[in-house]
Length: 320
Image (cartoon, rainbow, N blue to C red; front, side, top):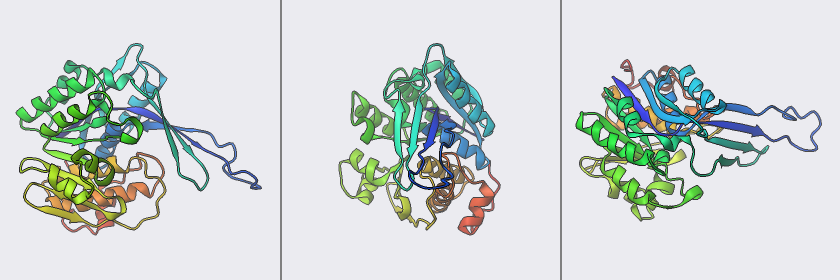
């Protein structure tokens, strides 16, 4: 069984700022670090790391960063046959500036547009053919033709019997409810069997309520499971009939970039093995917790590491 992940793939350039006035500072003049990034691509790499057969579908620019983005996915074991390089397109770069002892600062270039929005209908339909699960990132729903192509392929995937999941990835702090994004997200919700999001910063604004549990409950239906991430507080989910909860883990935080993508991958991997919603939440929490204890957006643990971390109960089945 294959999971097809469709959406954004870019590069992350991380710059660790040196401390000033510190003699013998080991971080002085450290080289920037370039790595693969993008919410959808991070989830694809994480799924592959967890042992799931994964294909990425998307577009990147015909530039050095596009080539690097594709290579990073291939290195993670992801099938990149569904990736197209756009002539003259620009691969998005996420610039991560890390002050010593401070909160990391994240900038996106170009701030709007980018080759990931050039995904056509034929690219999308061909790329997800035969997949048993389709996972979508909302990042690629902010512009055409990608938004229309993805909505079309979500319909096609459900018609073929595939499970369709959506990480809303609202990023309202960056772009707000600009243009036609709100109605597009609403259409994507209607086409989703599973919806992921940060319970406070994404699902609350989406449902127009202030309480994260009420937000998750209000967005769920008997045919749409909604999963809200609560960071250190764990996660909650509602399937239209029942509320599920899973506690978080106390770990030393090294890097939170990509934690939500790792969580999504963990949940999908667990469900692909036929495990319960409760177990999938536990497994997803464990995957995210191990991820934030390591540097980099793609520091996803292996299936065996997650099993050992959460205690292994109900997690011994071979992955897909």
